[in-house]
Length: 456
Ligand code: GDP
Image 1 (cartoon, helix red, strand yellow):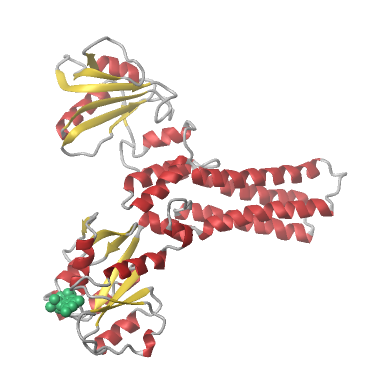
Image 2 (cartoon, protein in one colour):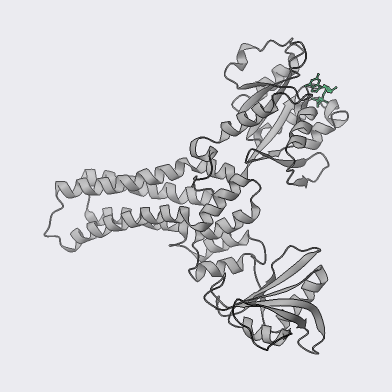
């Protein structure tokens, strides 16, 4: 039933724009196109050719909009089904009327991510690639985009497939011994099995190690700027915002105090938390002292602890220092342009320090670099070749695959029954297969695709 009906949605962002596209996928797409599209020349669709004409109402034939139409016949389309796109003028009302006409012709409104889900169900892409499509759309820095594009193109899928291939071979080997119980598994066989499974474990280990950085590239990090009044928090914030023009999001929260702004720091998307709180230091925050900001520390991946290097270390600095214990923190020694008067207490021992002037901008580049290298290392820093898992879903299934393989190895050492060893291998294979969706359930697919946008 899933694949039998024809779905439709507006695939461009809602709003005013140059063009708006209504996309239709399914066996009814061409018939709908023939009913709704009046060709300027000819009367039939040539696959993958853009036709010029008009979209008309299905009942009275009134022109809804001047438009272009393209039919992509199965299987050479995004979903591997017949896909029709109607390119109209990009007004909200125009595309909504065109969509309504398409629905009136029998298409059903697509669910979020349903086009991509069909691409997956029809075998054009695997689950990692489907997720990567979403990441490509959401990417906010070049590095996160590059990682998403590599995943979408199949670089991670290939790695997973290689692990599956190796494990399938070992499973076949073990099953052969189960089928012919008269043959005993010998020392050499055990060694080969152990080596094969060890290889898979290594590769899984590598992918798991890359997870933190993959996730950081995909999601970015959240940063909280703390410091006593007049240390220079808002000057630093403004400097970061000004020098990194890519302010990507403004997310107003329930109160005016919580505003999140994202800047692109050398490929790392950095969400600056509570920027309104910093900007309004003269009212609420000032009265409540710095404790309100300190409450936010647990939410942050990184704390920038701003100190005024022209003033001695004070009680408020001490309060902050206690509050950031155990948190990844960079001490920002601000006002480096003024004569120094700050003695850092021994408690700051290992904390990375950057001396800078938010006023003149000197040292800001170094801060940016320290933030970047605190979170990204090695391959991830030079992100051109970096392939990683980037979602908790990937990590969780690889962790369970790893446990199953460890069970297998200890079972082999203990001389356990081959049948139970085969179960461990099958468990591992099934877990690895869940990354790419080789093994999957409808529930899992619902979860993955529900976070997509409609029309994708
Ligand atoms: P906040 O209260 O921590 O947000 O501090 P502000 O950013 O409002 O800065 C407090 C004062 O210090 C302002 O008068 C700034 O102009 C000044 N200030 C901030 N950064 C620097 C700096 O790097 N050098 C100098 N000389 N003054 C600075």
